[in-house]
Amino acid sequence: PKIYNRMIVKGVVIRGAQLGRKMGFPTANFDARDLKVDNGVYYSQVRLAGKLYNAMSNIGLRPSVDGQTRLLETHIFGFAGDLYGQEIEVDLKLKIRDERRFASIEELQRQLERDAALCNPEL
Image 1: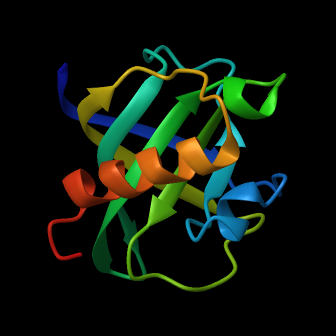
Image 2 (image 1 turned 135 degrees about the vertical axis):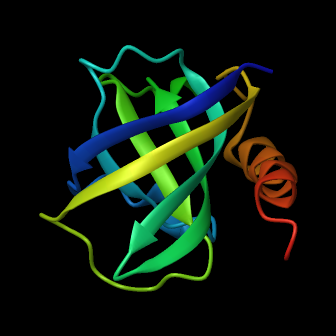
């Protein structure tokens, strides 16, 4: 894994395909075409309304769902709310794996559950 010391990325939250929500991992998404960060899954943190949340972020093209645009997608543990149109800061702490294609959505969901356990020990 690559450890990033306070690699903070910012972006305005846009509406995605809402596939993460269907798998139990809703995400705040923003355009990542210009980010100078390796594609992959990261343990991250997000501060919202003065509270710090553990999060899990993916940067990349989402090959399992034939994504075309490089996005940063962040699932914020313990947060429920509408962030569309708001600028958020995502503090990437640790890369836990490379982005890869999964054979099925079910396989992707199982991997997300494993990733979530690494990113949020409170689960």
